[in-house]
Length: 414
Image (tube, rainbow, N blue to C red; front, side, top):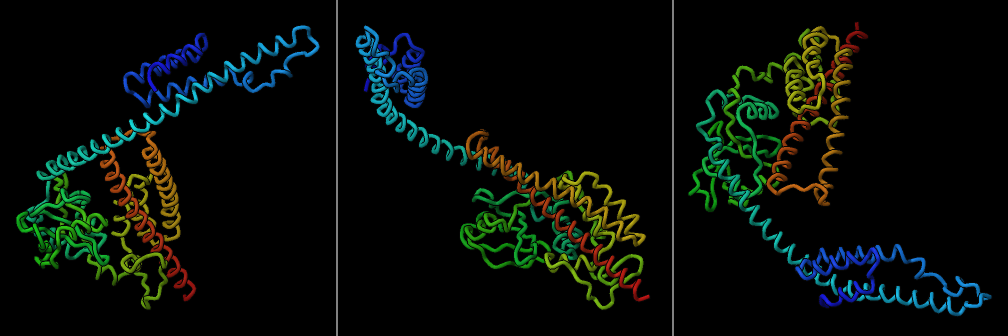
C-alpha cells in the first residue's frame, strides 16, 4: 500500500461526493496519521455506497424493457456502469484492511505512550500531593490535653465528630501517604483509635504506632501492613485544620448518665426490654435507649454537614418543642418526613455518581488523573457524611418509636 493506491481510487471516484474524502485520506496517510486516514477512507466508502447501493444491487435485465429496439444496448450500458461501481467497491475493500492494520499499530503505539505518560503523571501527582501535605500534617503536639480527654470519654460516633472538629481526613492509598511523626485514625473491631507514627528513619522495616490518648503502643506494623489499612479503608491520615476550634470536653455527653434517664420528662423503661430495630448495631441500640436532647443535636449536625436535608433546622425545633414536651408522635412524623426527603436526595446523588462514573469510563467525560483522584476523594468524604446522617436518622426514628410504644404501654397500664 502506498499513496498511489489512494490516487487510483480517486480517479475512479472523480466527480462524486466521495472523491475529496479519498484525497483527504491520502494526505493523512502521507503524514503517517493512520487512524485518521482510516476514518476518512471509511467515511468515503460509506458515502459512496449510500448513493450507489440501489444501482449496485439491482437486476439490470429487469430494469430494461426487452421489447425495446435497443434493449440489448441499454442492458450492456447498465452492466458496464454496474461493473464500474463494483470496481470502486473492490478498490475500497482492498485498501481499507491494509490501512486498518497500520491504524491498529498506531493505536497500540499511542496507548503505550499514553500509559507511560499516565504513569509519569501519576507519579508526579503523588509527589506533588505529598509535598503539599507535608506542611499540613497533624502532629502529636497538635492534640491538646482536653481533646485527648474528650476522645477517651466519647463513644465511637462522638470520636469521629471530635476529630472532624479539629482535623480533616486524607485517604491513605499509596506509599506517599505514609509519613513519620504524623497522626492517623485507625478503625478496627468497630472502634476508632487515634495514633501517631514514629520518625521516618524508624519506619524502614517494622515499626510501632502509639495511641495519642494513653501513649499505649500498638503491635508492630510492616510498611506494607500499615499501608494496607488505608487501602482497605481502615485508616485515614489527619491534616491540620486551623479554621476549626478545639472542642470543649464538657460538651461530650456522659453516656453513663444518659443511660440512667431514658427521656427528659421522667418516663423510663425500668425492665430494659424495649425492642430495638435489628438493623442497628450495639452502639446504635444503646443510643436509642439513651436518647436525649444531645441525640437530636448530633442528627442536626450530621444533616447540615451532608447537605442533603432541606429544612434541617426543623430538627432543632423538634428537639426543643415536641421531644422536650413528650409529643413523640409529632416528633416522629416530622423527622420521618425529613428522612424521606433525605433518602430521595441520597438516591438521586448515587444515581448521578453512577452516571458520571460510566461517562468517565467510556470517555464521554474527559478528566485528568489528578482531578479524578480529587473527585473520588470528595465523593467518598461526602458519602461518609451521608452514611453518618442516615445512621443518626435511624437512631432518632427508632428511639422515638420506642418512646411512643413505652408511652402507649404506660397509658394502658394506668
